[in-house]
Length: 227
Image (cartoon, rainbow, N blue to C red):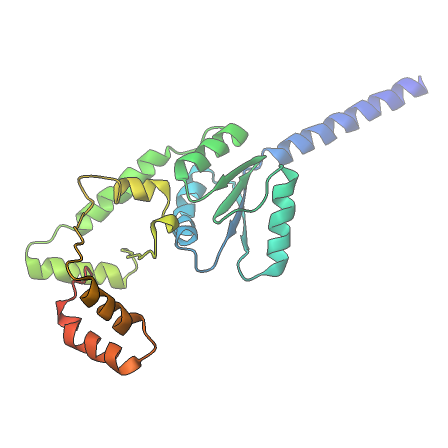
């Protein structure tokens, strides 16, 4: 009788412990490894409130890895647990899945695969945000349009980014800009006089500062700035 009672108690405790473990595993968790100056990481951080609306109970662990050596070690350890190695930021670990780069669709797919469907349809959230932005863009004159642009820029609702090379851009950004024939701009570069081109190159890239300064001052007004 005593053995049966002990067995029953052990079964109950085991069932409770199992339920607790399963419940703990069901808490949506995202390990977000990022770099302080990384533009893609900044974009993802701005998008995280949308993810929190989709998964209200989510736990997001953020680790800056470009300047924090302890977080770098933690990053390597966390990825080693799932058979991966650090390669770039943002680096998102969801369950045993690694998503490198800011890819909302892939992040949401991994969240659903590990923790079930979202509480709110993310597309609905994004449509509402776009409608609100469209309403704020409705202005009646060019002067008002310019003023609205400045207000949005000052209020951080609009963000302008510059990249040193195409390698810094995500595939989605390349698809919408450089790789899209309807939006990209192609300009033919023709070097008619190699000697003159070499002279200009020496002025701009040489060690002499006065010639470079004079060139910039005399040609500054010819530059086309798109901001």
